Picture 1 (tube, helix red, strand yellow):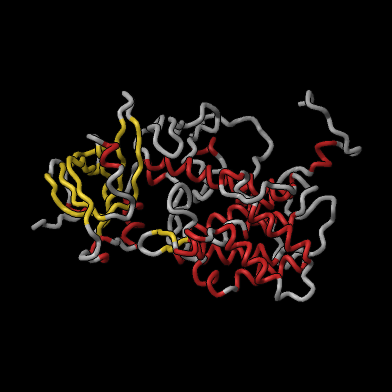
Picture 2 (cartoon, helix red, strand yellow; picture 1 turned 30 degrees about the horizontal axis):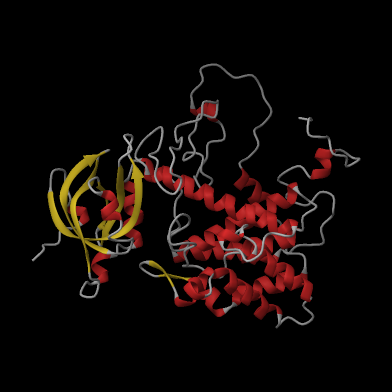
Length: 425
């Protein structure tokens, strides 16, 4: 009989023969080109990093994230924390296993993150699940309330009020892996995409802001029915057979059909934003982007998902300068401070970092007063908080919209609107 050894009890040089659940799994390549597996194993007391160095390809094919493993190996100390080096493993039948023994509470995970002083603590902070997901949903609703076009606004609010969406969105994940793959991650991703869409509308006023916001909010909304975000993230039957693009299109048609006088062409444009947001037929989109707004929604989704995935890989990696060449990027990523006066690495400059220091010269304790300079621009998130109007949107001036985050195209091209040409700076 196997004796359960809990993650919180593991110590350097311990011999281990016990059961854990696989929270995350990635395949990596060492400097000498040899593959190995990077795992995070969990039980009700917390989590432990683990590695499989021998026969990694064979081991990789034998289990997946969410499986229960009987592992044998030994514990080493790595960057001051225990790491389990697995010598043997076996996938177990989950039927007789009590899931409660292998599900750490959100409070426990937050406490572990707060105690950690390694690189993971500096990474993008996943939401705390339904609580932070609900906060993101509330902000999404605020942005939808400010949409100018009455039909688009009614449809977005109707989608948010849909029974399945209102129940699942606060706790839904955006994916099984790669980006925002945790409870509350979908709402976080949609909110980030909508904020990006607002800024892009400032920079490209020839694009329709209402359609950009609608596409950013609707493009992945079908994932509330595609994925089951319980103790493990898994696909529903509808998700496997239909997929979130078609589910999103169905939601748009269902809600539009109940709004009196909803224009058919507007429904087609909104549906196109969802169906084309993967950007390529080989990536699962049944249509390529054919409107400017569809192209920009695709790029917004791509940017937010890839930047988040990039930062997640940096946060997981224990190295200080270059990451290992892990999936999904399969190349070494620079995570050290930049060689400029900013002197911060990507993880230090993450948008959600609290109490950002706006006066680095004071922080660095300069002995002599620096020459007077123009005041620094506040961080983007501060601009969003101060620029957003409290009331629902009013008809916008086609010139300078409120809360302008970037120069409008007309200000860049000049009053005549002429293109400065490819050789201009």
